[in-house]
Length: 440
View: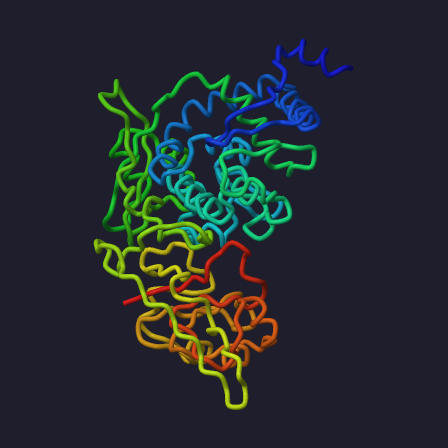
């Protein structure tokens, strides 16, 4: 059966040579257009399924779009949620990814989602979408092209590097070729299909903020005049029929009667939008911003002075470069606003450090980040009292030469700046500045 015949059956227009996706002007080469076309046809193969996804999207995407707009990422990224889960909060992949955006446990925690025996915010409509937006923003500031950020959403930041053409880094254009990553090919197909099919925005859910003592689901259902089964169906993020205490939560109830205004997520402030550029951990080398101070409402942090060169040892006539790049190249990120602190580290630190944690954190100082996994599992180290790279290598039992190479350092015995993020198991990404955290 020819491709043209299939197009006529489904009434599908040919794939255009040029599209705009997430503000990026994409030129699609013929072989790539054929790959996209085949996937578009696959999406149309079962009309009842396609229609069900469209109906679900018309009801759920307004809340996803609100999260994307709030964080400050392109609205087109909403199609990734359809691609990942078909907007099914109960979707679970073979690798253990869960929810609307198919987050794995550690990635979800890294972007601020709560997962425990009572709740799983990967299934929360707004919060999972805000977390996905933050993760995509992180990848954008790392790879400086939204379509490369989409690839990195699937492959991870470092895993996306083999699929990136440096020609388009930092530009709002790209060429889609036959060897372009299949995940991006499918993302383009989803945009082309659902952009034309989704015609309405239906506000069927009303978000309600709650903070207080533990409440049973049946109490809340009774309060809003619905059955407890309906309440739990609208709130799949609740793993138990209980709304726990400990922090504010937003739960959903059905909209009753005509709306005078669009429902708004009442607890947006639990996430920081990306205009606070210091919230992005992987900062591209030429990205300019004013880093805020340690205070949550403070102004720009003062620029630090360049580091002087290290004096040469006796008998050596050559000046040794600083042990780390000049501070004008260092991103000073207030750790209190930094949602991408590695998931093996905890900040603010626990009120009490057990003997095990003290053993794992020999450089610990009051109020500084704490490593919460055994050193053999750590992937980064956060310098806390100016220790040397040699001391770090000895503590983690890593090769000193590899740490020097991974982090582009030169003198293993000079004191490192407090807060520097040291990579232990892989090279620092080619376009990432040395991240240096600050804390009170």
